Length: 89
Image 1 (tube, rainbow, N blue to C red):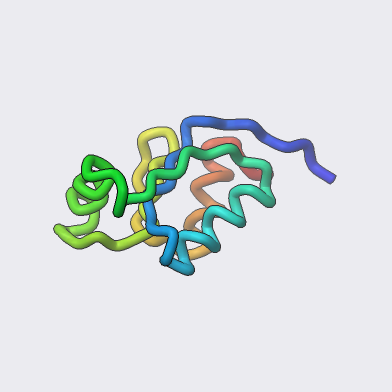
Image 2: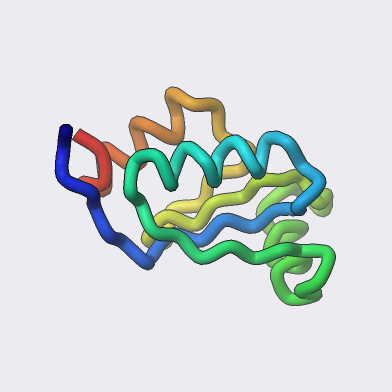
């Protein structure tokens, strides 16, 4: 089993009611990647961040991985970005 990577410079912006947000968070947790979660229905600045990056919409999830922004990434894109940042082997 690979060692768990602890990385706190990952933020997930989403909604508790969004299945895709919950899937992404569960994937990160299974990989041992620590992340901060911003629930945009309770955080106006988080919602504004999402709208700025998602063409004015509140598309979720939006991930900030060490400054690289992913809007509703598919699993391959997410895995590739994590690997690029050294968070996945």
